[in-house]
Structures are given as C-alpha cells and as structure tokens.
Image (cartoon, rainbow, N blue to C red; front, side, top):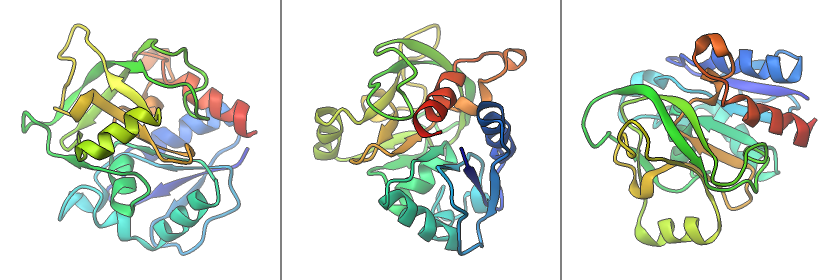
Length: 225
C-alpha cells in the first residue's frame, strides 16, 4: 500500500502521520512538498495537522491554494482516499473537497487535550474498523476547530450518514470548541474524503497515552492494500 503525506511550511504533524502510516503499512510514505505540481501513484493521501503558512489570512486558506492541492483534488475526484487531520481538515474545506468551515474556538483559546469521540458511522474506509456508537479517546490541539455550516448542509450531512465523529460527553466538556452538532469529523459525498479535527496519528502508541487511532489506520490498510 502506497501513501503520501503533504508537507506545507508550518506543518507540525507530518512526521507523526508518516510514523503512523509506516507502522500500519510497513512502508514509509512519500513526503510531498506543497510546491510540487505532481503526486506519485498512491492509494492514500494524508493532509496533516499544523499551522500551514502560519495560519495567515485564516487557517488553511493559503495551503488550499498550494500547487500540490490541485493534484490532491484531482486524485480525490478520481476516488483516491484523502484524510485531512486538524489543519488538514481546514485545508480540505478551503479547497471545496468538504463543506463548511472551521472557525475560531468558541472559547477563543487554544484547546489541547484528549477528548472522547463517538463513532457515528462505520460506512467508510476510514471508520470501518470501529464499532458504531463506540466511544474512543483521541487528542485535539487546535485554535480554529469550531465546525460551522448552514442548516441545510448540516441536515444533509445527517441524512446522508456523513458525520464520522462527534465530540462525546465524558469527563470534559462534550463540545470543546463549540462545533455545530458536536461535529468532529465529516465525509464527502463519495465517502473517500474524511476531515477530522482530532489526531488519530497521535494515538497509535501506548507510550504516548493511547492507541485508539490504530483502528483507523488498520482499516485503511485492510480496505486499500
């Protein structure tokens, strides 16, 4: 299984994503620079977290216009799975691959902690390794993770079973950033693009505090390899 991680100026989770992918697939991913105009032949593309271009203008806005993103959009349109994590989710909304936008957290502060998430659908290559309605724990680390969309879009996401994860009640606030309908991750219409604010790549080693992200990467390998 061949994978690629897109790297922008300001990416800070590209290596975490690369380690998680290599552990799951047995092969190091291609690290593709944002200024490249071509992508290798791959089975999965990851747009990682970080602060691309320093989050100038707004989070993900400049990265969404990087040369390589034209290829990412083209690959996604042809059916290649694309996973956008944190800043990567923001970038995917900027390109139009996913609807809505990620706004400043409702509390106007950076939020960094592990949160409970409910699995809302297993009908995707990303979430098929989990049980429906199961609650897992993944870390978040963002300042602009407040998911917003108009009511028609939100209703469509619900009706089409395209909400992948929601923030769940637990020992912490059930909505750490104010996202509408507690949305933590969504799928596109074709179900081959997932954007999520929590970091599964930071939850693949027990020494780092948890392993609930492993099932996502194992499911990708099982479905795509």
